[in-house]
Image 1 (tube, rainbow, N blue to C red):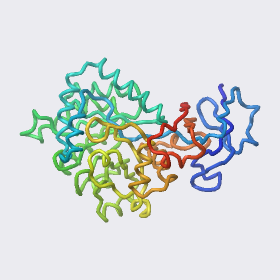
Image 2: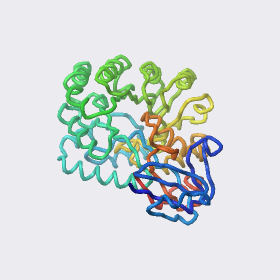
Image 3: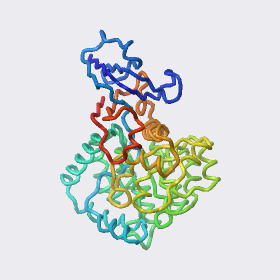
Image 4: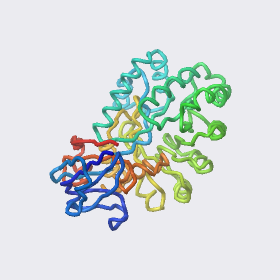
Amino acid sequence: MSALLVTGIGELVTFDPAHGDLDGIVRDAAVLGVDGRVVWTGPAASAPREDADEAVDVEGAAVIPGFVDAHTHLVFGGDRSDEFAARMAGRPYTAGGIRSTVAATRAATDDELRRRLARFEAELHRQGTTTFEVKSGYGLTVDDEARLLRLARGVTEETTFLGAHVVPAEYADDPDAYVGLVTGPMLDACAPLARWIDVFCETGAFTVEQSRRILRAGAARGLGVRVHASQLGPGDGIALAVELDAASVDHCTYLTDDDVERLAASNTVAGLLPGVEFSTRHPYPSARRLLDAGATVALASDCNPGSSFTSSMPFCIALAVREMGLTPTEALRAATVGGAAALRRGDVGHLRPGARADLVVLDAPSHIHLAYRPGVPLVARTLRS
């Protein structure tokens, strides 16, 4: 048994209502973790020091739960910086650039993809992310989609089969035949390697009818459901996600009143990806509108080479506060508790007893500095269970 006591915490954000409210903020605090699980949090003066094998004094720093990034696309080849530069010069974003990444990914070796993925994993941890999801979707053949999921499983248990990212060029004249491939041989190869299935339900990608067919096929194989929807314009993807009890529907950039009502009445989390709006210049969705209606909101990076090439959850928090109507504490909750809900995980995103002892020590006295000092590397240390 290994027991670590983290003490000298100026501000501890637990999201444990046992400490008085939903946020569970404790001043002059300590945390005791045993074998990678939280067993006690509270005032440092009451800490069970005798139970600790090791103690770490963070000298007044703030400590928060590790970030939970529930939407990333980290296994890919190539580079799309020229596309970004063109977009910043005025060219609008469309989903078509995904196909250029597909070509580069198919051409990359396993070792090349694995090395890049390892760099991303280290980058996430340096910025305080301790749990993250990774999608396939840049292979779009049976062998390549399975290959990407095998690589992703080397860094996370939260893997998502996204064979329905776009219709590849070779099926451009017969998209329904590609849907048949996704729901047949590709699903057979990928289901054992994935926890989730996802689809890009959007104009230029997959229709609602195609998306429903794909998601139902995945659910029948035991995969949880996730959906990309309403990124490029309003549509029926959010209604489909709620219909199928999806764990999350992500983007939600263009929300109707009916969409908001559906989400508020459901178990489906609204996954907001502010890095996308930053990069594409689409309007930011209103997280305030969703929260006020009673919906659950998650923040995620959507780290990908085309529309959001950031892995920084602190950056996403700052954008959500500045552009989406969240308070700093609400944004932190969305990046931790909300992300855990989007993955239907009860063991991460908070520091209640029994949770994984995933802690982030900030080079700051308060979590508010994540939004107050945007762009500053405030994560001093990431402790993962």
